[in-house]
Length: 164
Ligand code: GDP
Ligand code: MG
Image (cartoon, rainbow, N blue to C red):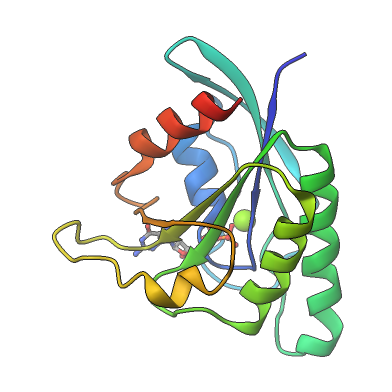
């Protein structure tokens, strides 16, 4: 069967936008506003003749109460990481590291699977990524990407398929 790559991260960091960018069937749901909850969805990918399946986790959740929703974010990350052969961990490069990012990072680290830390929404490729904040997540070297514009996504796919 095809290898599985999970895309995890807290709500609104651009997971679905990235999945749409990377997948053959561009049907991951991107929300412009918060308030929708969805489970994970599966998307076929093909990169240079390597087939694999991307899992998009969660929808946008109303994150008004961290107490209620932090466990749900962790649950979604756990379920997806369990299934996965490799993990794409997305954070928002315009915001910096949040408590929820650290929550997801704990799950990712515990899985002991290859992880690709993507600092998303860096739409200006001439701007250098300020990496130190993201190294603190303890999941390796951060890479700047823009799922919206496609910057860095080809290099990401090269590295992901090499790890499968
Ligand atoms: P998810 O909850 O992690 O799946 O996030 P979505 O993919 O639904 O995106 C959340 C919001 O971030 C949407 O308004 C997207 O258009 C926006 N977004 C996603 N990727 C980028 C990006 O690379 N650059 C910018 N500027 N916005 C992005
Ligand atoms: Mg989404």
